[in-house]
Image 1 (cartoon, rainbow, N blue to C red):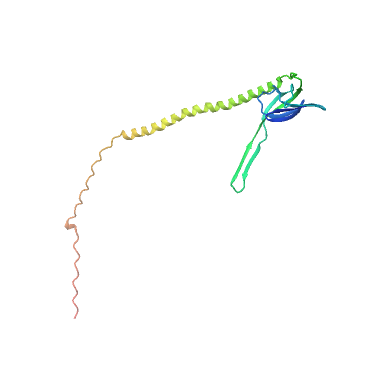
Image 2: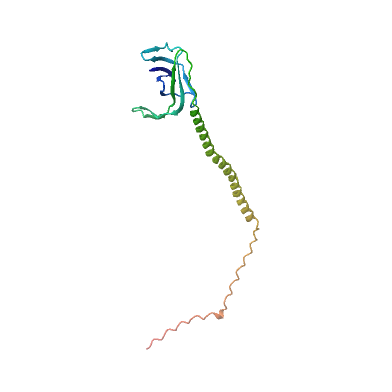
Length: 207
């Protein structure tokens, strides 16, 4: 069985035909053909060729599948008795590639672009863009409407106090009529007054 050791993204991977490997993120589209020219070792059964540092004329070809985020890795830093405790998460982006062939002696790859995978990726991208436009359109339409209503409310609030002010200022205050002085009460004539009661004379003591 033919195998090879390739170097990409600062890491080394042992691959063989039809292997699906996850490597550091590379710039490609689903269905594209990707090649790796940094081949450190090529083996075919007992025959092994080791590069110095690379094997001349060796090439590994494959098809790009997708780039996705991996599971979250928790990064915890702590120092005892120092009140230092930090907790962060990280999600690494890795590209998935299917190895198709291992070539030696300067041979050129025969792998072709996967048109079906490319079409699927384009459909997904178009659907995602359409959904994003649909969600953003109502928000954009709602903002101008709210902006127009705000000045109208301010105008009505300012106009109302002005109208009240004109209404209060329009009627002139009438001069206060002088208060009528209360007529002095007529004194009753002396005749009407009852005579004072006479005191009874002391009775003479009987002898």
